[in-house]
Length: 83
Image 1 (cartoon, rainbow, N blue to C red):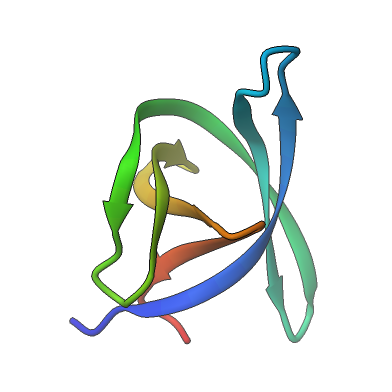
Image 2 (tube, rainbow, N blue to C red; image 1 turned 90 degrees about the horizontal axis):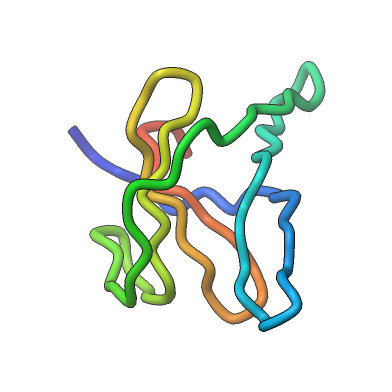
């Protein structure tokens, strides 16, 4: 199944030592925006994406699914099955 690079809005917490923790992801569709809580972060590391680009990979549990959320040059994107 083909993956796409989907830029998303993310609400984050930046700690006093500069660490970045994503808390919520905002998914935008034609009907509007949906807020998803990031339930758990299982891994944080530098990585390349399967859809191009690289950055800090946050392997997250969002809405019961494992998702790869990337922080790339001051923006966030997901590897998504929908363009």
